[in-house]
Image (cartoon, rainbow, N blue to C red):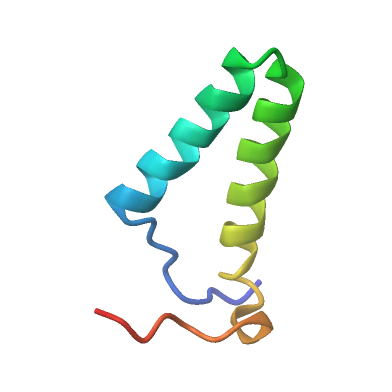
Length: 60
């Protein structure tokens, strides 16, 4: 398999994902929190393989 672009999660993005997961868990939806976290990172990591799915962030 060909290697694609390096996927980098900025600290603010990782923190926001964590906070959303914690919010969902604390509201009584632990399975939803886990699914949200897993699917979001799976999608982000899939951009390594298919970077043409979406454009890259142009902001530094």
